[in-house]
Length: 204
Picture (cartoon, rainbow, N blue to C red):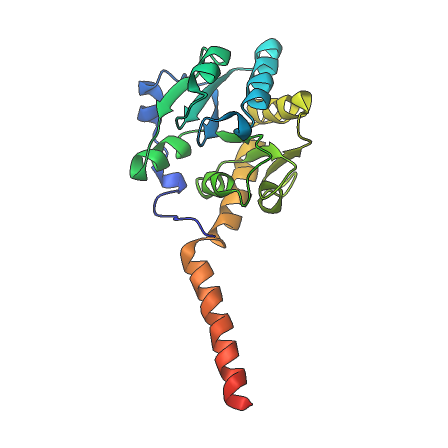
């Protein structure tokens, strides 16, 4: 699997887009990206956001996607911005305009959403589960949290909200990793494998 870095990159970040969606300057934008279904960890996401509210941490939730549980999610997150389903450049712009991705899903096989966020230069707070934990380096490109640990998610988000330099550092490290996972890099690696196989066969 790879990521399309033409679509997902930090250059898509758009402060005008943020302002148009009611996001104030001092608010850290926490993104949810994907189909809005309960299996994506919606309850854990909403619980973490409520914990931030209780701590009085300035933030805005940005939900990018749609799905059958949208009404439930909107009820739990009354102050969130819901964009509906986006594609192409619009999707890249929305994601790059966030500050951090919260991905508490424990059902991701590979973690495309996580990789797309990293390609946009976002640190990722994610469940220590399945594909995402193979992508996020804990304490380096984001934070891995035990599934269901609301305080763990809230602690990680609070740290990022209070330390923009930490957020930027982890985002840059994630971007560097994502560059090794774009289609050009992956296709190049596949070609090298084929070349080695061909050379071995020619020698045998």
